[in-house]
Length: 474
Image (cartoon, rainbow, N blue to C red; front, side):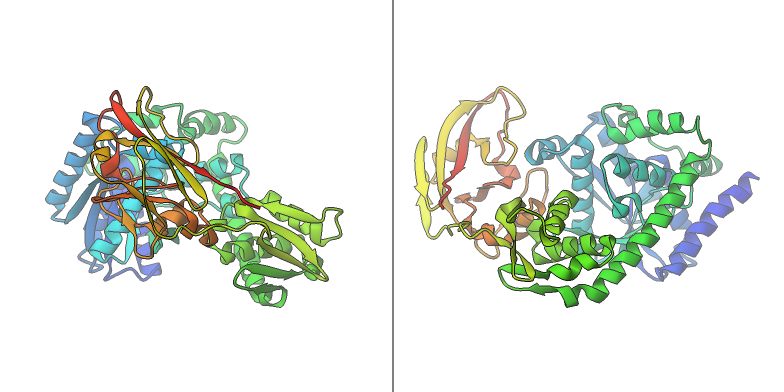
């Protein structure tokens, strides 16, 4: 029975690889050392000859569990060597990423992980990233997204093959274990004398997914012992409905929407469509308009529809300095008429300590002792960096095409343009964001965080503090 169980999993993975035409492919296997990824790499390694697979292992050390994190990396390196599979091991300062981007710990870890994978995809020229998400993970994802108030797309969960936009790259993500439960991957490891690494953070109740796994799902099983199967069926149904709506929107969007350089024009008779089509069409139009507009929410879309449908409001205020207003039989979505970002031209030496005035901004610099690890405000417009930087010239300028910097917690550099996208800075604002530099490179992009090499080496020491205050003009 155990042997049949073992063969079932391998067969499922084999069929999935063939279904998505990944035989004879170069694949990057994300391996943490836990039971799911351990079973995954063992299965993929056993299939590589028959399916002509070229495998590379990727492991990111999140540096969250001290020596245990280092031992995880060592485990994966030894495992890769035993399988004779090349490997890439990265390091990330997830705590710092959490502070800088104002994320939860699990969000920061996820972003660091996928940024590392995207970078490795380019470096190793692989065809897809293979991850060990299971049937059990799928059910937890559906609950997680439902709790957050997600729509159909959120409760659709994960797909066996999907594409993520990471740092401007379109990364294929392959999940061959989505029909396999976590219990089955554990049994597979036992059958093959594989000893997974134990991650103590999986029991931290401060992490939402752990609460769902250890508290919520067991409670739901009191009502339905097969609740996980029910949740996965719900995800499948939602995915089908969401895909149908998306395809339907694509067929009609050109009939209702005109994209111009600085605005979107939508015909008001779009409200005669089915409500699902109307709201999704408006959302898709806003996302298409600019990478920085992805933080538009369903609540904003509902207000736009109300405006189109004869509501009493004259205009709707939207994030990122945008507004919606009616004009004849259309609704215009554009940046506000009085919204006039000032481009930063030239180079301005920063007074240290002191106040430096530049077009659209005031930069205040001072020295301050760091008393707590949370030293960044929510929008990254107040930061502390290494005091030693003040020994040389520091200046501020505007963003230039081709600018690169080393984001906090990353090993390599990244295009500032991609960082703007990550932080949802609209295209119209990017040339008005201050870029603080030294002879070594970009220290800080206001609103987007500092470079890793510029961070304060000791948080109990004195630091150089910058605060950028925007001067609003109407």
